Amino acid sequence: MIFLKSDDEIELLRESNQIVAKTLAEVAKLIKPGVTTAQLDKIAEEFIRDNGGVPGFLGYHGYPNTLCTSVNEQVVHGIPSDKVILQDGDIVSVDCGVFKNDFHGDSAYTFCVGEVKPEIVALLKATKESLYKGIENAIEGKRLGDLGNAIQTYCEERGYSVVREMIGHGVGRKLHEAPEVPNYGKKGNGIMLKSGMTIAIEPMINMGSRNLVFEKDGWTTRTIDRKPSAHFEHSVVVRKGKADILSTFEYIEQVLGNKAI
Ligand code: MF3
Ligand code: CO
Image (cartoon, rainbow, N blue to C red; front, side, top):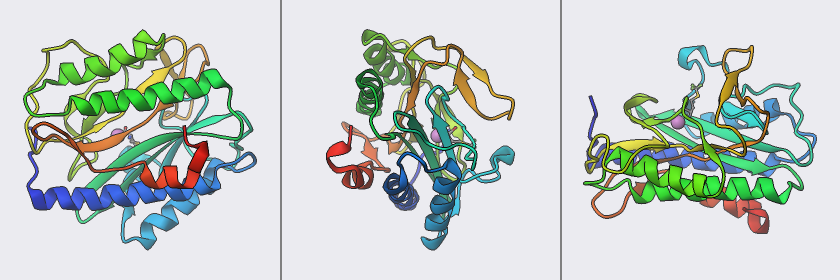
């Protein structure tokens, strides 16, 4: 069952997503070599609660934290820890959810820690760009296969691979709603998108093989070949002609300044 949202509901979703965006900007201020992912999690939780929200991931199927922090070969769902100390040259995907006024916000950004190798920066740029290629297809009358195909084509043309096990999703009163939103697919396949559908699009793109394994903690996924993986996510509303992006990277990019990728 896909829930179409009213304009009032969309504004509540926007508010939750704007808090997510500002939380990620607070995290961006802290990211540097020597910082632990537990420290990032702590400031994110405080910021969300100060803004009248609740961490959207905390307790979800038993998930223990506010953020997912996935470093280098970790793909998604990395658990923040005081034992994970960010190092110069690392990349870290920070995924954040906020629940407020009965609606979930969900967005993610992959950050560079210090100086990162150019080929890894290129992976981040391509993954972020592929998210916007997906968003260009989040319009009424297109099909989910068109959206997934746009992401897949963009990434595979550049020699990267698209993760299959984890996908985007509808978002609203629940963090994960119908429909499933794969980052791969065939043009013309899948359900037709309608104005008012709200979806989280989240390409997870690997430098090497697309295959993953689960770490022993039961959450963290990493690439089987231990090559880096990138992840960017926006929550959007399907509209006629142009999607409305509910989250934003604007605040993050203000913090990063000329270091933004
Ligand atoms: N953006 C991620 C997802 O949609 C966040 C979920 S983390 C979880 O899968 F811990 F809440 F599962
Ligand atoms: Co998501």
